[in-house]
Length: 289
Image 1 (cartoon, rainbow, N blue to C red):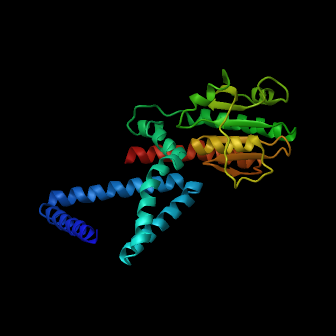
Image 2: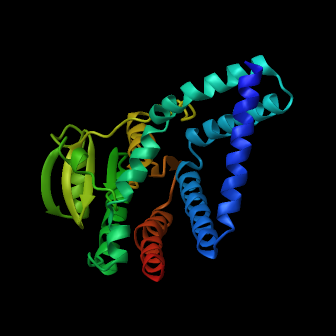
């Protein structure tokens, strides 16, 4: 067995040396190698940014530690330890597909979103003025519901489409207005139980069901409404406004995190920053690239 392993290692060493020799035999090969490395580094950085501040980020740290332990065991010739770790990592590759499913789904969905299409001029940008009007109307409604302690869940669709979520509720296709939003969430009315989805500057649907987050780090005092907001903001790039029925406090869910107890003026600023400012900056960066 040892002789077989030594033979394989020698073969690998020969292949590596041959690869290096071929690499520097022509300037074009060097350029392609640099491009190859650049693409890999870019993809790794994008993936790291995607899963940053999520449970997957903590899991990734554990994977890196296991990889380092595997490398150290090989260097120190700890045969049994290295064998166990190697077998474990082989099986774990398949488990990663399941563990990182939400993050992988989100990344793949973003490949077909407006951020990429707009960079090539295929899609016309929505009006910032129109979006700002929607934000102010939502802020007015949220403030009124906060004062009356009326629970609310309002989702702003961004680049990732929420058609599957919209289909779970009652489609409205109505103009956004504070009066409409307040009336929807009045307790014991037919549409109050669920979320409102704002898409293309309209109230697309009400009484929609959102995926609940099963994150154990969420405080126990936060109920289903907040867990649903965190869940949809983690699986998609949506921004969610929540009004607590118990306390009347306004919160915002974004990227799987919760910004709690937000005042009306701060609510407007956060929504404008995420729905208008950052969007324009991303689109402009995409065009320049």
